[in-house]
Amino acid sequence: MDLEKQPQTPAAPQKPAAPPAQDGAIRASDADRDRIADILRDALAEGRLDAEEHSERIDAVYRAKTVGELEPIVRDLPAAGSRSATARACEESGDADGGPAENLVAVFSSSTRKGRWRVGRRTNAFSLFGSIEIDLTEALYGQRLSVINATSIFGNVEVRVPENISLRGSGTGIFGNFEVVTLEAADPEAPVVVVNGYTVFGNVEAKPKRGRRISDLHGRLRKHLG
Image (cartoon, rainbow, N blue to C red; front, top):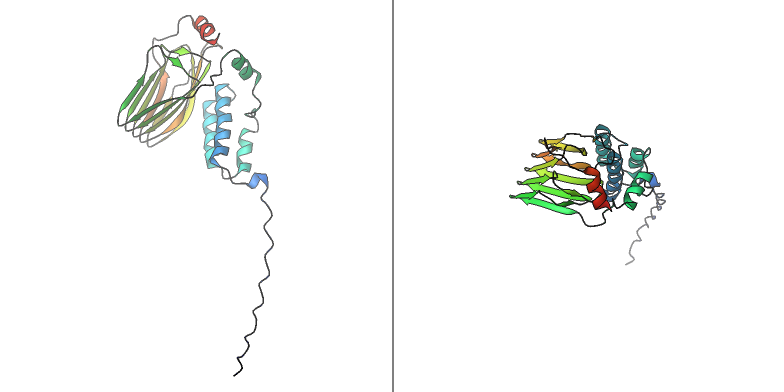
């Protein structure tokens, strides 16, 4: 008995491959966002942006979905690879600290940094149901720019600085408080402390400590910057 031949189903034509995405349409990675955030942080520390502008641009960075949305945010700022003359001069005079960041962590506990200690270029403070106190009033500044990245989740991070340095920063409080009392030193060569970060159901607070000042500011900078 002959089997009835079934009609062959024609193969569906192959769809042409989608053209590769242009650079600006590539999805932004966390590393891409961090690179832009670093440029904004440097611009804030150098006085190119004020705290409000920095906050607005940081919000835009973490809302961006593509690389093309990130680039316009820093179009009017020096790129990370092209350091300003001021930044290069600071680096040559010993302002750059290539050492690792100092990490302060408090999880259901407390952590304190105070007294005469050498402040690094970068300090990370993380509090989870804990409390961190960073007192810079007697600290030794090994560079003019020091950045503190503070994160508080159901916790507390407090930063206290002398009255005669510059204090800047920007952050976000989600059902919490993020407060940096901006301070501009009369001396343009005074140390600059920048406090960035965020808090969720917690508190991050940075302000000058009344009555505490660095005596012989220029002498101490010359000593530690060489």
